[in-house]
Length: 78
Image (tube, rainbow, N blue to C red; front, side):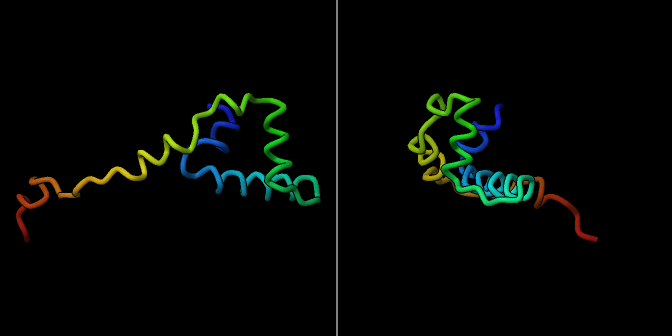
């Protein structure tokens, strides 16, 4: 998975983008905006080929009941 895919895809992309902004800022002793970082990534990666936010929303909106496995309850207590 390329660096741009980590930045622009998935639910954590904003945190990764912020981390890149901080890393570049410390490395080059100047501040970078999110747009500047994305422009740099666009030079090396095809960002348009990444999936859209709509696909993430399906995952985030999926609800499932949580239950512990039966083996958790079968253990003997000391």
